[in-house]
Amino acid sequence: MKPLSNLLPILFFAAMAVLPLMGGDYYLGIGFQLLMWIALTQSWVLLSGFTGYISLGHAVFYGLGGYLTVLTWYIVPLPLAIPLSGLAAALFAGLIGYPVMRVRGPYFVILTFGLAELVKYIVINVEAALGKFGRLMMGAPGLSTLYGVMLALAVAATLLVVLVGRSRFGAGLRAIREDEPAAETVGVPTARYKLAAYALSAAIPGMVGGLVALRTSYFEPQQIFSPTLSFTVVTMAMIGGSDRARGPIMGALFLVLLSELLWANLAELYMIILGLLLIGFVLFAPSGIDGLLRRRFGR
Amino acid sequence: MDLLLSPQLLAAALIAGALYALVALGLNLIYGTMRLLNVAHGELVMVGSYVASWSFSLLGLGPWPALILSPVAAGLLGYGLYRGLFRRLLAKPALVQRIEANSLLLFFGVSIVLQNLVSLLFTATPRGYQPFGGAVVDLGFASVTGGRLLVLIVAGIVTVVAVLLLRFNTVGLAVKALIQNREAASLAGIDTEKLERWSFIAGFAVAGLAGALVSMVEQVSPFMGFPYMIAAFVIIILGGLGNLTGSLIGGLILGLLETYGVALTSPNYRSILVYGVFIAVLLIRPQGLLGRARIVR
Image 1 (tube, each protein chain N blue to C red):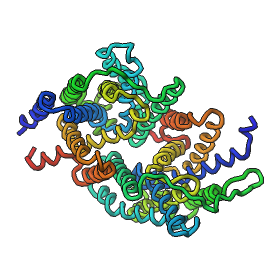
Image 2 (image 1 turned 60 degrees about the horizontal axis):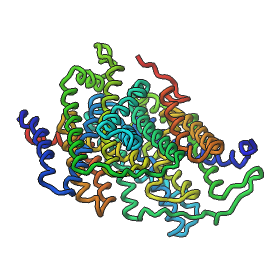
Image 3 (image 1 turned 30 degrees about the vertical axis):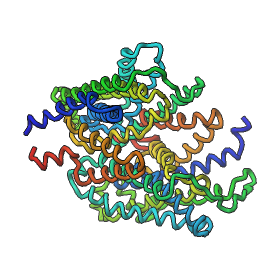
Image 4 (image 1 turned 45 degrees about the horizontal axis):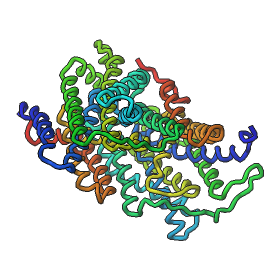
């Protein structure tokens, strides 16, 4: 059973890789969305899944990455601008990470949320001072190019979760989640590990944000820093359930399909179902779809 | 300079502060007694506002009955949620182990369900009404509308009474004991489960009352709760999680800070100011300005 379940993410990404050959732009668009959410949720798991520090502010890295890509548009060539966006987001996380990761429990949750909102309002005011109210980006690459890059990011984020999960670093992060003082006592460098996890989890959303800004070819701070993104990521991770690679894939797949079915004409109903699912999963299946499958098929 | 000394501005700051303190009171009561962070708190304010707006516009009852109807409606909702969701959560050891994350997700689920249910049933169009026909009352040093004056009086009385109850009333002292130490409170003969249930309901009811007051000074819409939840978070960070007197003072600080900060700079900087203070306090004194430092190994 075990080898098969480990194969599933590989099969999934292989299917996503041949999608451009099969489907039209509509399916490619959904695929792009799906890969985006997978990349974001995996990067969230890297921090919050492993350490138990629940971040409600993932949008800040995504937004900053998008903003940097927009700012350097026409100035820096794209193959450089996207990695640069990821680097900037990671750098930002590294700079604020030390004091931020000292804050624990519910305080940490609202701190990350508040931080994302603060940065959002700063960007809004900077844009207003520059006299910009939304920016249009002409001549962005087509969907199939962006799709390929997003696929690479989703695979990279998934690999990162797998590799960190198997490493000494990952074991240290899990120890922090279970009991931080105890982890400290047995010699886990908790402050350094937490900072590293924070910066690492920021890099991918930074690049994803850049790609999404290109895809929509429009930049508006209210939209790209929207807290809904942070909330959705947490929901996907929860519904997927598991700090292994397949959890976020299943969570993202489930919600993206659901939103495709309902979003177009029943946006409110979709959100209501999302809320009910979240409640249902927390109460009745706290280990998510992954947990349900494992119970059904034994491991 | 004249602007800063204007009693009109002070009145505005006090009204905002009293309302914020009331919103934060309910949030802090639930956090203090049960250690649950209610991110759906703003939606309860919204529900209270809708009930008040209906009792005014549809039932033609005037502004007063809403002060009873809104808290009752929100309190009943609280009772339902406690029975339906949170008792289950607290009964499963596996879920209690990660109670912070789990309760947060539960409340978040409740929040999006409430927002979208109201939006689906009653449309997202903002609606408003004028209590007392928009009459302005002259207080001698400043003039305020009847609605704002009512906000100041009701929110002021309720928050002060709540703080006094915690000092001098037996049940209030029991709540205070529960906030300080659950096990010890239980050993001292306090029925903690019953008290938690009532604190949960009271927290919801206070949010409903705050909602009724909000509806008298601004428009009602399904997504109006968010800024109030944020304000309540800022306040309980200022005053300390679980410290109810702190949330009264925190509310006043935020009201003053916001009103004077905006008067000194520009309304565009309002959010930066609020979040900036919030984050600065969290990073420098995570236990709150008035919270007592807990010893961490």
